[in-house]
Image (tube, rainbow over all chains, first blue to last red):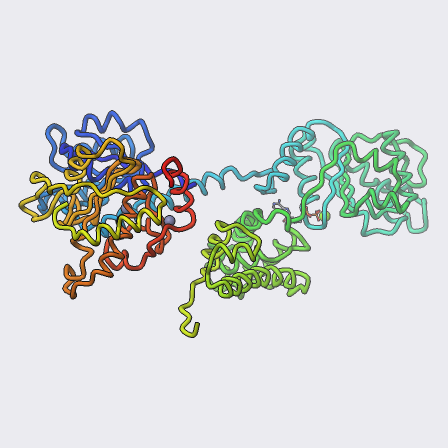
Length: 454
Length: 173
Ligand SMILES: Nc1ncnc2c1ncn2[C@@H]1O[C@H](COP(=O)(O)OP(=O)(O)O)[C@@H](O)[C@H]1O
Ligand SMILES: [Mg+2]
Ligand SMILES: [Zn+2]
Ligand SMILES: [Zn+2]
């Protein structure tokens, strides 16, 4: 149901009030009619008045004075001044003071219908815009992360609480969903924010290199170790140790890590001295660890050690509402970084971004926007500025969606034609109810063709 | 009211009865109320006539529609085809502007009857609580010109029909 439109009529003549109220009510408006300005002001707080139609000449407060008062209390209410006597002066005065229109009685009914509908339409747009802006403000931010997806916002809330503790956190999610960003946010929200945030990319290194990267080594621990070196665990000190792509480490290193987590101390490679661990550990992976456990590629005990607090970031394709938000976020960022002044993105280009499946998630979107901002010539990013891969999987599912509704439209058109647009019979054949059929006819703008050869 | 041809009224009676499945009766001819005449505009005030109709309404009436051959208006509009109390008892339809001759064409009773049926169903719809419909072909579409009237069908659309069906329940034959 559309929200009710409230109209207030103010006129000292009863017959005017009654006839206009009747006429407006037939059109579906909620109407109230009062006989003077004082009564009108009394009624103002009662409703969210969309429109006030006010007689110019009334005993007591005149129409223009009343309009002034209304504009003070209810600036959103649109005022139409009605009068039987057209003088240019009063019309100009009324319009200058903010009347939307000035109607000289009698008025053509078609013009009045259109005027009122335009007002309501305009108001709806203004309201939606205000609503939209409010919605945008509600969007959520966690340091460098933005989202208005409810799952993401829940995660942000959770993070703000758990950040205060030292619990280990496991962050899961596809590549590019923001696992590292979230981990940094945890660090920044925690009491450790002034201590280091140290990242270890577990996937990038061989087992032995990773081992020394993590634990450090003593001089002469292996060939080439001509100097003692502290590992990342040590470097993290009282800060946060971020173990990225933990799902990729070898079973031996998993064992070593488990021991570190359990005993809170370790030795450098080739060393004897026990070093205690004070950092908080956050681990991230794009692998499904439970599956890796089944396949015996990941230790279950380590999983439970890491999984004290667990967060799974949803892929971007499951939160398309974040696409415009992220675009805006990246635009702002790259404008600063590149010293550019790109103001926005064309609607058609945005459509493309919304239709795309984003296998690389937010990172891929960031890269697409970055490239677009390099190549764009104007103030707006256009379709041509976007370089999206023509991934077959994506375009196929997209095309299928289109052809499905296309097929439905054709099917309904054929059935209607076969049944000579008898709605009841057609609905029966289609197996839907009549209202649904009417809705589909409107949706697809199907029209009864005048068939001459019947 | 006034000069409406009897044959057409009886045809309308039959049509409304068959279409709405409601008992339809023609009351006696009611004179056009003198005080509804707006001298300066040479038109009749539909709201004032509506008040008179209400005063004359038989006690057993479900709804009452006045048919009049005078050009109607309300103070703020140049003319109206008719007027109804939304969800109320009475309505009025003027055939003055529904006539082809009003628009400089030769008279056509068929066209006039068609338009009268539409406007009578329209105003009755209002009396039964229906508001204007966005469907241009629905009889409840707001017509501001005879072109609008001619474009609509003489029937209610699916949703208006369903609403009306519910409202006429207690009296349906
Ligand atoms: N919610 C978000 N808000 C803003 N930028 C994001 C968001 N998620 C991801 N990004 C962007 O995507 C990039 C990749 O994120 P990252 O945390 O490295 O993903 P992952 O570690 O899951 O692969 C980030 O550098 C950042 O630019
Ligand atoms: Mg990453
Ligand atoms: Zn109407
Ligand atoms: Zn309708």
